[in-house]
Structures are given as structure tokens and as C-alpha cells.
Picture 1 (cartoon, rainbow, N blue to C red):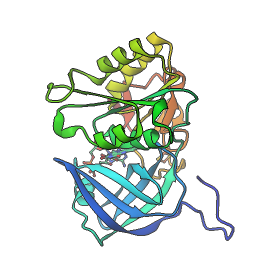
Picture 2 (cartoon, protein in one colour):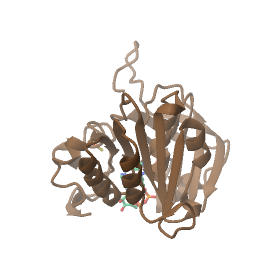
Picture 3 (cartoon, helix red, strand yellow):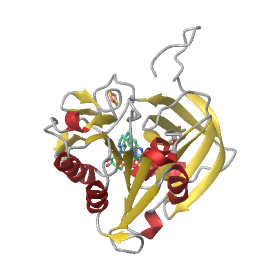
Amino acid sequence: MTSGSWWGWPMNANVVVKVKEVVSEGKGLTTLRFDLDRTARPGQFIMAWVPGVDEVPMSLSYIGKTKGITVREIGEATKALSEIKVGEMIGVRGPYGRGFSRPNGRYLVVGGGTGIACVMPAVEVSGDRTVVDVALGARNEGEIIFEERARKGSEEVQISTDDGSQGRKGTVVALVEEMLAKRSYSQVLACGPERMLFYLLESCKKFGVESQMSLERYMKCGSGLCGSCVIDGRRVCADGPVFYGREIDEMAEFNRLKRDEAGRIIKL
Ligand SMILES: Cc1cc2nc3c(=O)[nH]c(=O)nc-3n(C[C@H](O)[C@H](O)[C@H](O)COP(=O)(O)OP(=O)(O)OC[C@H]3O[C@@H](n4cnc5c(N)ncnc54)[C@H](O)[C@@H]3O)c2cc1C
Ligand code: FES
């Protein structure tokens, strides 16, 4: 998505969009919908700018003409995004990055916590619910989002929560292991906390299933220029955020190290 338009202005340049819908998805989680007529793939992200506050990376939770981001409030920028009202404006750059590639055959989509928002377009893009199954995991029932979307777009949806308030009690990785034991999948597509992805990758390797996983690192430019998001020499914003499991398996920093906002390498 770095190609230019015919008159030379980059197609993913900063634009200001009007928020046309705000949906509360539960405690601390808000979806903002806005029109943005740019092609996007599942797993791609935008840089969302709140004037006077900050600009932060957000996965696209909807990729049609009316796009969407789903924000978990954790700090200043995500609080400001969560407080946006219908009719207010935000700045958008992107979509950026390498998204999920559509696998051949039946595939399993796995979302953990806020990562559910990032994988949901990968469920819907199949256009054939008989080739997709979904596993959703979160700490508790209130954090399971987009269950209805998942059911509409796939044949089987399984849910796990850490506290057992919905679905299977335990981690989504344990749930996925059960699903992999029952049925064969061509690939597993996933987004979630890095610790979850680490164990999920181990499970995929155990079952001999290829995977694609969306990673997060600190992003400034979002477009491959500044180097702040590098993991083992790969720019998460431009070479990822979605990487194949076999690529992640070679990353020594995966589940161990990341860079902070000053570029210092710190423990994850
Ligand atoms: C590719 C990608 C997709 C993401 N998708 C989503 C999403 O769909 N929904 C969602 O709620 N969050 C998403 N995030 C995380 C989100 O960008 C951070 O939660 C947000 O930047 C925090 O900013 P803050 O000012 O609210 O919090 P701060 O208090 O400034 O930061 C809290 C923590 O958030 C992380 N963070 C802060 N700034 C950045 C940054 N510029 N880049 C990466 N991480 C940062 C750091 O770990 C930091 O410790 C995504 C991150 C990446 C890299
Ligand atoms: S955020 Fe600048 S290179 Fe990735």
C-alpha cells in the first residue's frame, strides 16, 4: 500500500475523517467507524491521530469502504480515541503493512483479547463460512468481542475465558490444541498478546500447521522509515505486522525483547 496515485500524492497519505459511528464493545473497548475509500487487507493497520494528543497504530477491525478501529483504553491516546463522539474528526494514515494472506483450504482464526479486532476481517474475507473456524479467548466474558460477527462468518466458533465465565475455562491456546486435534487445518491465523502467540506457535509446530501471526512493536512512522518497530532486523510496520510462523520462529527477540519509545531494547 505504498504506491502513489496518478497525480503523485501517496494514496495512504494523512487524511482527516469524520467518525460516523461509535460502538461500545464492553468495558474500556470502543469501535470507531468512518468512511475511508482505500483498499485494505485483513491484518493491516492505520496510524490514528488525535489532534493535540498523539498518533498511534490501530488494526483495522473493519476493512470495507466504511472502516473501523476497535480501541482498548490504556493510556492518553487510546483514552482520547475512546472519547471521540460521532461527528468528530480523527487523522488517518494508511492502511499500512503486510496483512494476512488468504490460505487455501480450511483455516482457523484465533483472536486473544483486543487481538480479536485485528483477526475479524480475516474471518469475513473468506466469503465462504464453511472454510473458516474461529477460536476467541479473553480474560472474561465481558472481553469477548465480535462473537456474532465470528458466528456469521464461520462454521464453528469456540470460546475460552481465563475465569471460565464464558466457554471453556483456560487459555485460548489450550482450546486451539483441542481444535487442532479434532480437525485438520491448512493454516492458523492469529493476533493476541505475544505470550499467547509464543505458546500458539509451539502448538502449531507440534501439529505441523503453518501459521500467520500479527505482531506489535512500538511504532512511530508506521511506514518503514524510522526503525523504531524493528524485531530481529524486520520492520513490524512494513515487513509485518503479519509474519509467517516459520519467520517468527527464527526471531530471537520474539517473546523476549522489544524497543521502548526511545528505541532502547527492553525485556518484554
Ligand atoms: C500494529 C499494531 C496494531 C495495534 N492494534 C490495536 C488495536 O486494534 N486496538 C488497540 O486498542 N490497540 C492496538 N495497538 C496498540 C496501541 O497502538 C497502543 O495501545 C497505543 O499506542 C497506546 O497508546 P496510549 O497513548 O493510549 O498509551 P501509552 O500510555 O502511551 O502507552 C501504553 C503502552 O502502549 C504501547 N504503545 C504506546 N505507544 C505505542 C505506539 N506508538 N506503537 C505501539 N505501541 C505503543 C506501549 O507498549 C506502551 O507501554 C496496536 C499496536 C500495533 C503496533
Ligand atoms: S514504525 Fe518506523 S519503521 Fe516501523
